[in-house]
Length: 125
Length: 317
Image (cartoon, rainbow over all chains, first blue to last red; front, top):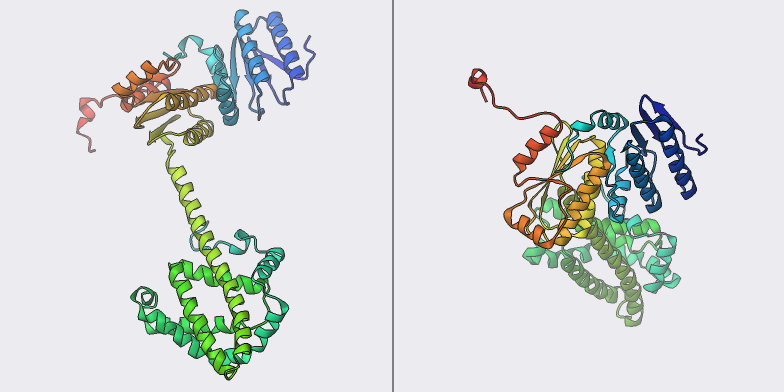
């Protein structure tokens, strides 16, 4: 049962998480725990994390988000992070976080598309 | 700034009551001077036309300064302004309104492109003219004339300082505007097709520019919801590790947003350098020519460039 302040919605076989509060270390930890439990329970094939409300992402949050994606993948769930702000992207690459192994998309709609057409997504060569 | 709009020099030069006091103090302008200047009003009214004429004798004798006054009408107008200016020195009231008026004078000289050397040179003649008229006014009482001249000199130097500050502020303002224009020109993001953006990078890429490129590119990708961002580096003269690093960081950030990036314009020598430097470049699509990059971009958004069929071939261009 999720205990954290971030609601996890289930639509079909996709889990949708919209983060609308500042992510402190404790929040992000409980968030990771909740998401993984929810994946185990529901057997979802896709996870979309919408971070469009986040104005800043520190290194701990970035690492936790990336790790959550990797853990989900181990459980057979593809993760897409959607709605990242330009300033956040710039900060992440400057800190050396490239979020390998995680899909990204401009909007929620495209995130769903990415999950829906996994095989067709042209990966970098 | 809007064209034709004058910058507010009072604000740029931070001229408030405090600054006015400091300036007056530095030019040693005291109440004595203010009173003395006020009593010289009759002197000013008596001699202003002679002094102005004497000043313009010098100005009209030199081709460089004469060029600013092409016709008689202009000359008559500026002489009138000069008289007003002269009388303004003797109001005895040197407040922020006085300063504002003086800044306006300085700005006017700067705007017509009058170089400071002519402006300051003319003041030298101005002071000499005032001195000789003062001696006449005080009927040879050199001590009184010297006191009066000293007060006038103070207020004139006070004015000159304001004018020169205006010159400098105007130049800085122009420079800032040009720099902004150059910055804008250096990252022209072009929309090639629906959801495909192109940024041709021309010239050297230093850290500051790289940051600005990244910022512009990321904002544009999100604003226009671009699927693909093409970076064309054919116009970058030298690609070393630092430049490659900047460019790759930008492409990585684009990918974080959820768009793809394509790097084009990679010449044989750039390819060789990048590999020899051991720069990791596998994460990003690369093509040697821009046209190939555009084709790839189109295929990513599910489109392609095709030839017209023979039937449609006769269509006008």
